[in-house]
Image (cartoon, rainbow, N blue to C red; front, side, top):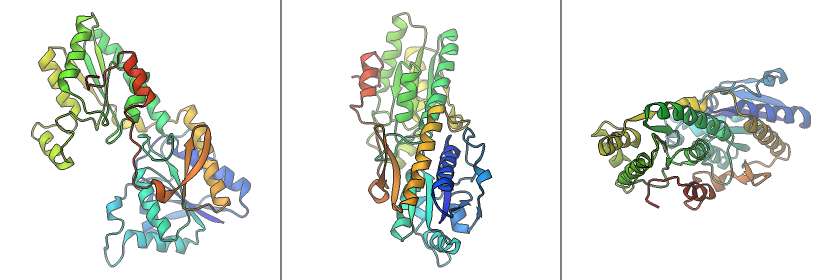
Length: 357
């Protein structure tokens, strides 16, 4: 059985742990298996860049961050656009057949899964694996890479606490998450943030400033705000993406973070700073929990290949590992529900979400 494997989209911790888990299962359970590593995500499949992997290639990578295969972003909207009498989907289909593959594993996030669904609809045998630090893949409780990113983001907040306390400042820590707030929610709670601002809950600047003043008046020398990069002020919530970008461009802002910091300083007089951990949240070794989860996810992907359960993607629900049809989850986003228990618990201990509730 010939199986290709690629990692697509943004990198994250635990990609290599998943690759290793799959390879170990495949070599131990699938007769005459051959594994082909495809370079740089869908780009490698489009351009026919791949190599046959050997068992030793998968040794010593459990705790290594990034991806040994390389990755790239291939916008979904361009997959079916014809260029030079062919589309990217058609090129990938041709190279899949040229390689003689019996199956293709695609490790990636939302965009990766949408492209995988297209390939599956074209008759390719696809198994998807849910990767993203955003944890926004529909149909699974958790994605690999998420727990590691939570640990890193939490440590950033922990470190900011000490400098904020020393200087009596309000510190805004901008956490990755353009569309959803899972990472900001979990890191904010774990890091003891006083205010947590999520894309799912548009905030009111006056409410945030009032919370900062209340803490100052109560003798709290500093405040910590965990804010998702995709957080929205209530006045922006009804705007289209281009309208929002234009409005922010007028003030030189890309995200809401810097504007909010200026407003806090202006309205409260409290010294305010912004910290952006950025791609640090994607880097480094996966956490112990992610290593264990990823080994399970990779091995289960191998099981799906062995049983020829294609057109599927691995999922974790509760304490069970299972799978969904790719067509059922592609293009759907798992938002943070407003009644999520973590939000309820945070509100009970006095955390503000900037909405006045």
